[in-house]
Amino acid sequence: MPERETGRRETGQRDTGSRSALDRRGPARHELPAVDEAGLLAGRQADRIVAAADAAGATRWLRYFEAMPDRLRDDEPRTLRQIALRARAAFGPKDSVRDSLPADVTEPFLESIDRLLKQLNRRDTGAA
Image (cartoon, rainbow, N blue to C red; front, top):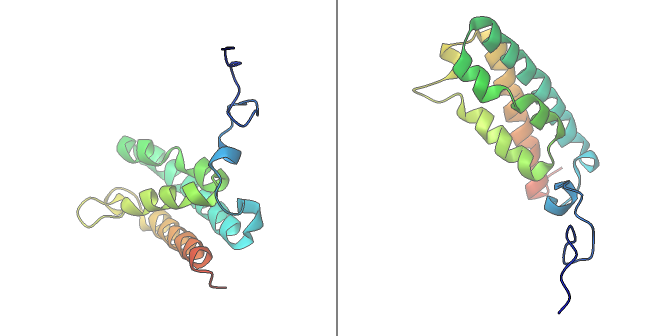
């Protein structure tokens, strides 16, 4: 029995290391302009959260949020929901980012995350 060639998938395609095409289920992000726009806005607001956490010396929140801006700007809709829910979880009833960072940074971020989740829900339910 011949050995399998390394770096090949069962489909015969060479594994380039990119997971985006392999993990995608449903339309690509650029095909959903409302989701894309909401994700980009949330990414910009996340940049502000990271800068505020860094300026305030809130290392816990800096570590929590530091990867989010890029993921909110770049991830596909399937994983975008996961990162948005993680961002939303930072506003818990007992332990909230609101306790460490100013409202002029946290509230616009929360609004942008809620807007993103709303667009993702619309996409999932087929609502316009």
